[in-house]
Length: 607
Image 1 (cartoon, one colour):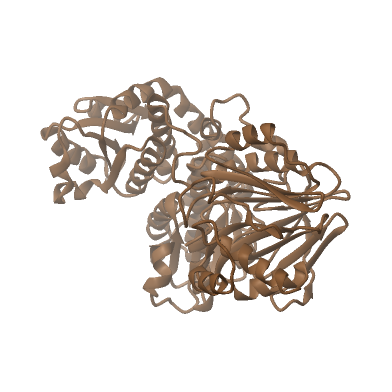
Image 2: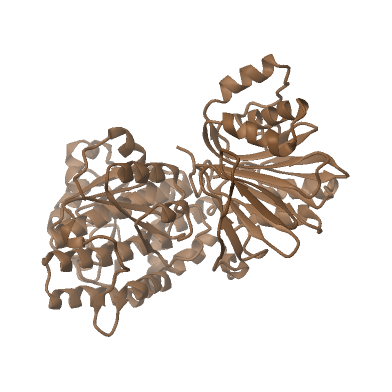
């Protein structure tokens, strides 16, 4: 969600902070602001809307100073207005905050009774007012910050600056990520390493409960009890050039075109091309001894997990449960002794998924996470990490990270099946060969772009769209509907095709396009029958299939996009790509904000 940047050094802070905030725009936000220390006084500039509004304000009212903090806010408490924008503060302190303070109402009542005057509707201002209260009692900034942190309940990442204390920023985290960047006589804070990519590659990650005092000379780390702690400095692989659009109109367009290379890079990490065998990283448990697996994730990652469940159960014959992460921890399911918790997240910071991880850890499960950020909180708390080699994904709507997750889950399926003896060496070689053929097949999908645009013209005029799929194509349909909702604001729902006649068929008429993913294979005839039912009700059939299935489908469908025919095992990965392209093309027609759709955030670090 929100983005945080902090800078302390000898150069003007505002230009550095503004550039870093632009690198955090992918997280989603609705207002932004910067505070600096000017001659020892706290000065702020804030604006609702996009960063360009803040930049315009700064051009008119510059904000000098070498110590500063900045923020992009995604509203939780209080409307997305200039007054509710961060930084919050008083004449003595200014604070930026990611997360939610759960006991803010209690704290606010106490502070107002003590004479503190609030000016916003946010939970975050409570932090600034609590620190200010302690400063007025004579505590030092370090002492005031520490006393404040001891009272906070909920999730937070914080950065604070203090009047009269140039050259110092205090940061803290609990449940939301925060990193410290080490420069040459300058230091940085950021919500993630991507924000600091051009500034430094030397990064230290705060653990939950940590807080840090940073000065141009370095950083001092403390735990919640106030005891000094050491945090290792690591080299991040991110570089500034990795986040450009490379000539594409949008990050999403660029990331769609990166599907082939991302699939190839991810498979290269997990497959030995000489032996045609999957090579898993060392795991601290025996795959063959796992009695049951539980997959949990949110959003698109959950749909990837659904496909993983189909695969693991079908090929490895291992029972798999799957839960939306935000529901799992409250459902409190019984877990098999020695079972596997398999978690999927692009950022590795998704609050609900992280909470599910900790719940499964407490229940004695082995923990494996499929992540795109291998220095994330989830990575540090897992027994093993299966990395997706997707690179930074900037567009809020996940695309290439999804197919990378599927590539990892496909390899894990093969590893499970081999360990459990449900496939032989010849079958493993065939499955691996089909995976290794995917990058070239994915490239061919883009040759169908004109056909997808014609389909998009039909969808763009609709108010409601139904997506259908069977078997592993059902999650692909769910992913397609989610993408359309996210970036076009068209209402879309996905159903297992066999369920259409159990209610959703009542919605079908000539104004409701029916988008279906129907590759050739064992479920082709069944799905075709479902589509004929929709056709009989006046539905406009728009179908993604393959070369083998196209002739039959063209007899009943208004629009058919046929991509290369591949084995049933890998078809979900390939079929995902045109479904995502469709949403992008519809968004172009409708003129919506493709990369930063309204109300959405990239990394959801609150429950």
